[in-house]
Image (cartoon, rainbow, N blue to C red; front, side, top):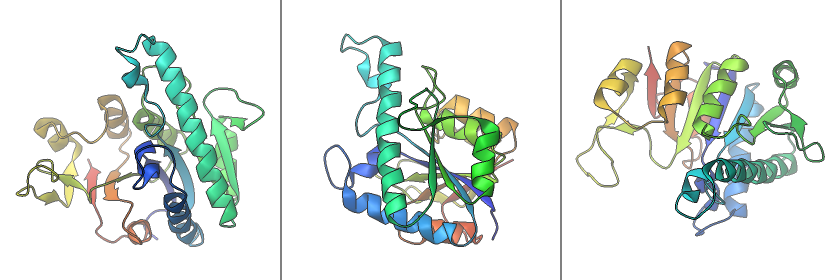
Length: 235
């Protein structure tokens, strides 16, 4: 295996499947199956999931909801998704731990770095919910920060497209995919991979990022075995 410990970042919108909102059980089951396959290979897996299928803090602007309040609402939305994913993984026979950036003792553990690492060493899948516990930070930033803290080998960002393109492939049919690209090139070309805080954190800690299509069966398995899937961002 090329990667022993990974941080998988998923968007909340990905859980909708073909639905307009909420959580699609079939999509949850598919994701659990993909993650289980990689876990059985011996890979240590941590996961961060967004909450855009339920609520996004930035969407609160213009609604009369304070931005800080909206961000906390978004954190709780990520926690709902994390609980749903945890349930799907446990139904698939995996052992999980849910750790939260804000205290919700009846539901999950608070995030403690040493405890998170110990869970991973015991081959438990760790899901990080509720962001980092502070407003104005996205789940991309959470993924980058948690990956650095647990000393992950790579951040795997699952999206709807199979990598980073020269332009939006859904709008420009002439767009071509980068197989690999440097952090500096991403800055210079102003490619929108993740928010700048998250991206800079990965760059400063020499933490590679792979952007790939998680909805294509087998892609996660192929990545951890070192195959050329998606786009690799490195120094």
